[in-house]
Image (cartoon, rainbow, N blue to C red; front, top):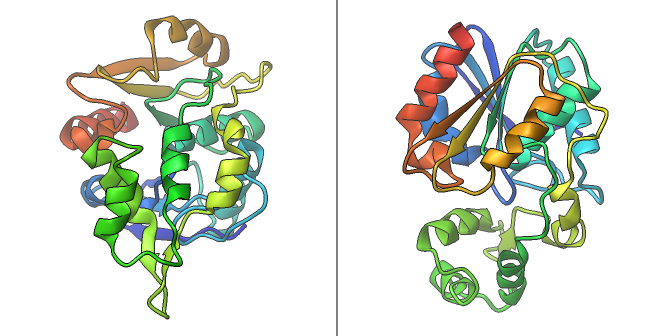
Length: 254
């Protein structure tokens, strides 16, 4: 699949992948700083943002999309950066396609299995009737019955837009993501072994990478570093951009 992307800067290539329900927009403040030193590509995953929709949403296919993107753009030895679903994607990519990426930066996700935990968000999305919706404020009011955190709602509603006819639409492929949500929590294949240097970044207030997950990380990764950013939740790159940028740059240059 030919993915939508944004590019900026010059130099060593970095490719950034966003998380579930997000888009390349989520990384623009971080990208702006990284592009002062590097060539940065920020992708929209399939079924997200401005990339095409598909009936399939698995890590195998998303890793293949990334492989196609790298080949199409003749990118050599990129550093891959991924948050949450994007982090799972680059892990799967490194397992499936050896000797392509130089390093990985995995933001607030581990290789383990995650059970369903997006049901309230999906219920909120499905409660919004796009045919009758009059405003973003109305959408927020409906979504607030399912998602209490205003910051999370603002993030989610970035996927809501008006088409050329003035009608509201989702940029995400809501039906397919709803149907295949179990794929998002899939563990890295048991036999996967990744030898390239990998930086794991977690938020101290996030439960996505727990201390007990170190064992599964060690099982799959022979060269890894785990760093905790204090006073940050799952959206660590949005809440603590300076800290995350410094960690990424130090890791790339070491």
